Structure formats: C-alpha cells, structure tokens
Image 1 (cartoon, rainbow, N blue to C red):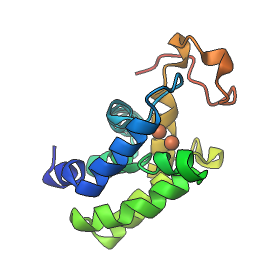
Image 2: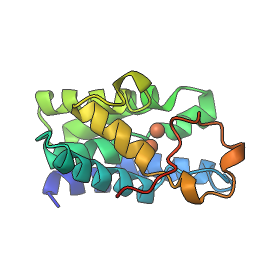
Image 3: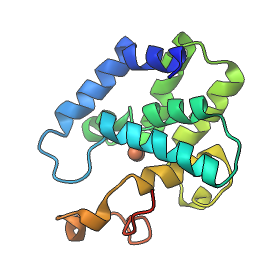
Length: 161
Ligand SMILES: [Fe+2]
Ligand SMILES: [Fe+2]
C-alpha cells in the first residue's frame, strides 16, 4: 500500500477520531464504524471499480474509504450527520498526507455523498464508495436486522464479493 495511505493511518487526528468512535460504539449492537469496516469498504470499492471498469484510482478510493466515517463520533456527541462531520474533519488530514487539491476534491465528494441515495448507481467514485459502503454490511447474516432502521433498499441481503 502506498506511503500516503499509511500516513493517513498513522496521523494523530485520524487515530483520535477512530478511537473516539470506537469508545462511543462499545455497546452498539448494530454495525460498527471501525477499521474492519473501513478496509471492507476500501477493498470492495476497488473490486467494484475493476468489475464496472470505471478506471478510478485505487489510492483515492482507499483514502475515501479510510476517511468516510471518521466523523461518526460527532453524530453520537452532537447529532451532526456523520457524512458532514467526516467531510469537515478530513481536509486537515489529507493536506498533511500529501494529497493535491484535485485529489482532495474527489475524496471529499465521495465522503460527503456516501449516504446520498441519488448517487447510488452513479458510475463515479462517489457511486463506488456508496455501493461499497452498503455492500460491506452483512445484513444477510445479521441477528438484529429487523431492529435496524436502515431502509429495505439499503440493506445488503445478497453476498456478491
Ligand atoms: Fe457512514
Ligand atoms: Fe461506512
């Protein structure tokens, strides 16, 4: 994996945000927003990029996946929708890790739209991250699926990759 992605993983702010969300989710029975989820989204987005032949850059998909839920703790603390919180927290990390303005723009757009149903089928990086995020969830094997408030068309009931 590239140096820039490892810089994200080792960034102090990144570690702090991931830790805060882990603390907030300790007793959560539904899906968590942890490193396993970030890596699942990253790898699925790369598979989908390949299968759909979209030609997006793997490194940018990976960066968006690592960062897309970093603001989740703020949703617990303050009620801020976490795609917006993540969108606000990510630029400082991306700047420190050597991403250009153009790259930052693409990554931030994918973060901001990862819960936007309107781009669910879009042949873009935003669409890939949206689809990978939903596909990463194992609703087909979940004991608390009936209690989960995700709407039906978001739930992942079929294993694909
Ligand atoms: Fe999310
Ligand atoms: Fe997510």
